[in-house]
Amino acid sequence: MGVENTGLLKALRNGVLTYSAKDTEKTAEAIAHRLPQNHVLALHGDLGAGKTTFIRGLARAWAIKEPVTSPTYNLYTVYRGSRTLVHLDAYRLESEVDLDALMIEDFLETPWCFAIEWPERIISSIPPDAWHIYMEIDPVEKSHHIRLES
Image 1 (cartoon, helix red, strand yellow):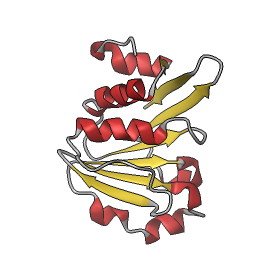
Image 2 (image 1 turned 45 degrees about the vertical axis):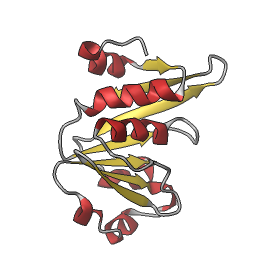
Image 3 (image 1 turned 135 degrees about the horizontal axis):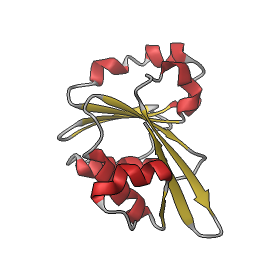
Image 4 (image 1 turned 30 degrees about the vertical axis):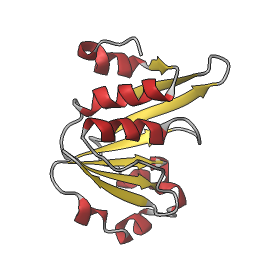
């Protein structure tokens, strides 16, 4: 990763490169401790960009023991550790009405993080203070570029 924790958020705003799933998870673990409580995290990126891998790192930071997998077929999964992590795959949602029907707010036990993959599908439901993580793959360099907008 090559980024000291003290400058992590600044580095992420400029973009960091990771060269393995383990590096991506470590980056997420480090950011997990800086993410405000009761907060939305929107993860942008194409299929295979590392969104679920990133969420796996958040889960480890919050002592979540269950294996984290993509909730594509379930739409969302709730994990409990030192923070409740609600992991939504919004790819199959057609609108914000579909999001409301899931009643996710019933599962947001303080402290929580609502991590959304494919947030552009429900962008008008994303609060303005959400943190947005943009992830891209560089197949030539075999790296992942991770950038934070908050």
